[in-house]
Length: 431
Image (cartoon, rainbow, N blue to C red; front, side):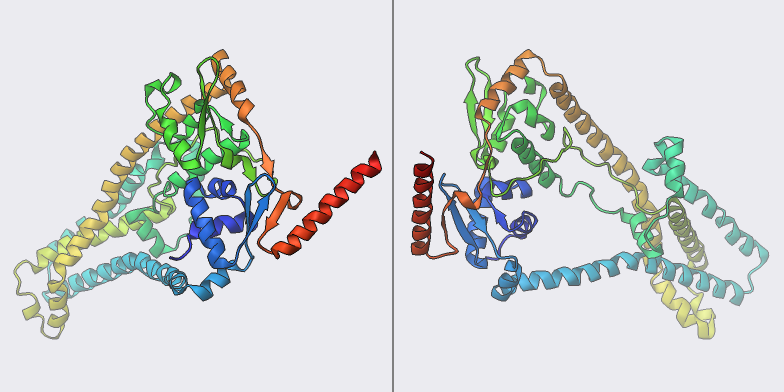
């Protein structure tokens, strides 16, 4: 079984010397899963175990452990190769929609021109075709109006319109059609990382109210005696509950109280924030251009359909009949693409509006819980103070080690005995 990429990334970010609590916090993983994965990674990558006199274990990895694993695991090499290949394939898929739109417009326009010129159409036919073109200028403005950014303040909207997109035309077409992915794809990972960080910042001991701003679907009774929502947190980070003399429950997490290195504390948000979905990362000009070309393509397909409806046009065109016959054969594909090009963004717009309302409600709910901690009442403050009785922080340095798998056990015993003798001699000299 190939090692977990999440574990490997966490080890690298933490400087190759870690504890289970370090990795669980960094990656937001279950403590048991982090422990098992670290053991497997140490075994496969030539890592070392360091045992402190307190019984805590530190994992030390070589900085080239990825190269060691690549040489050992064909599956890992295959995954890295496929990741590179897929990035190229996905880029080709993204630009293919813009390419097909361009090709579709060219085919429709050329075919209409051939049919009209070959049949010596009168001015009514030309004016009919020109009447459809008026929608070109209307629909881009419609899609800009439907954009979720339309409802923001005027100043912000003008600023966004001045910003230039870093997408090219073909990438902008894909963004207009399908958006730019889920902005909360790593929400669960962020949730557990922030929860673990809060526990670490409070030295491994917290109350439920300090964790609730990072959870969902807690219910109206979360400030009362029911704290069932803490059970997944206890399970994930191997926590233990404690009860104060007043009957209040606090929670402490022994594994998250131990670290391999002293880390500088950094601030995090007082609640978990979900990001709103964007209609498109393309600029307003690119959105209008994409919508306008989509309208032109769809209207052109309707005009072409009216010219091909008798089914005998290709037979009357001589040498150009083969080209017109080809376009006639794929006409329904062109029409379906034209309809979908306008329909998909329109449906996506309403879906985004609905989705963002839900996200806004959840964010406001979490903010309201976070405000309780800004000015806690007397019972909550008493609860937080009691939790600090369980708070502790332990950093395992080299001086705390009693065993390391890096060196021979006999050498370590000799070195340890020498350290003990030196310590006794120092005490005797002082006395």
